[in-house]
Image (tube, rainbow, N blue to C red; front, side, top):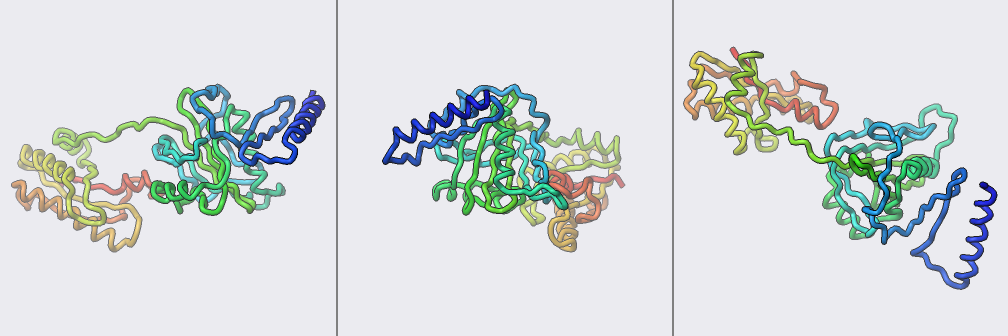
Amino acid sequence: MKRHLLSSLAIALLVSSCNNSGQENTNDRDTTIVIQDTIIDTTANTQSLDITNIQISTADIGDFPFFTAPEGSEYINNPKVKAFDALLIAMPDGTLQSKEGKVYRSFIHPLKNSTVEITNHYLNKSYEDAILKAGGVKLFEGKLSADQIKHYDEKAKYKGEDGSMDVYNNPIKSYIIRRAEGDIYIQLEDKSADATTIQILQEKPLVQTIQKISSESIAKDIAAKGKSILYINFDTDKASLKADGIEVVDEIAKVLKSEADLKLTIEGHTDNTGDAAHNKKLSEDRAKSVVSALEKAGIDKTRLKAVGYGAERPLVANDSDENKAKNRRVELVKQ
């Protein structure tokens, strides 16, 4: 069967060559790959592709991010995993479209002491083969245009981070695997070295986690745990309260007014980004801002104390953007 397919392919190529003698259409070249007994179309010209017509894949592709690094290679430099973020995806019509969902970005380099020789071509073909077998379709292949690069500069907040691509100098490839639970987009960088970059996004809606802070919830936490952890918004790198931060302080004042004997230590905390001494002073200034606002709301200053700990007492390890956000907080501790 394989010999028959290869022979048929050779005849087709010969006929195509004869039909196009003396002229070349560089915008519409079709290539085919014979994998076992199946011919897979990997046509580069995808401009007329309608994504909604792509069949939904039901292949077993495992859990996010779905693909291991090929043999002899590894994901390096703390791959970026985002529960919800956006990626710019190169689409068939030549645009870069922002897609939202769960994101994985990583550099891929040769595994140390591996006996397998790694090339960019090997890495890209390994992923392409896996993507196509999972029901994926190529959306785009090539270098971004000047307009696309300008759009990337304006919209890609992640450029320069680990797992970002050098779109200024290198071609990229983008693919889609349509899934009932959310379409999967994959992008690869076509480098000249023995490495590549992969970006994976599975479309998912935002799960809203913001809850309105109320005096009831603050009082309940203090009664049960002896403290309440709050995320109060201040101006960037400043101690001045934003409008919604002032609203939170008003709720704290309600608790203190309803419980006349309650005394609180207002603790300021930061993540570990930047200078430790600066962070400690910033956290103390923010705690003092909360105390000052409570005093203006009619709370006796003898019931309040402000302390800043900077990054000295993290709730969780400062090893991701999400965890750093958890550490930037204000704690109300019962005295």
